[in-house]
Image: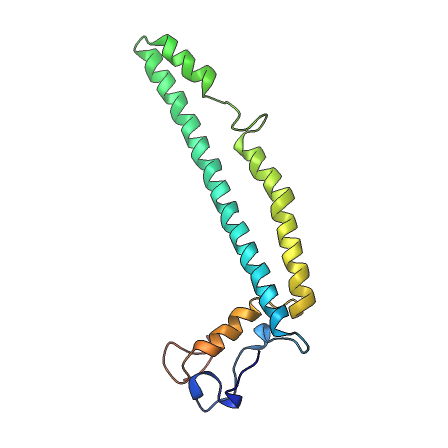
Length: 160
């Protein structure tokens, strides 16, 4: 990363840059490549968040199915058998998508798109940053932290 601060690091302190080895840019990696790898990582993070929402959907629909069954039982108990049957035939156990319950959606997503997104992101990271994760973010942190200020340590292991 181009930096005109020399060995002073962030905000002009009296130390050398302190990005830890697990996040250090490998020799030859350009700013544009590191930024692109960071963008691919961000894309994967959005895919991971979407996956979490898919699991939320899976659990929410499952709970709704149980509640529809309870509502049908309650309606039947008070003699409203036609409404109970409507719920049972139209809502209880119904496919959410054609031929699929939500567990099947989750499995197809995991086995397809999610797995591919992880593999592609890893391939980019392996090629550009030697497999190191969050190189772009580590360099951004180093640029933005204030040397010698509590709460701005370079790593969790840094002594003050």
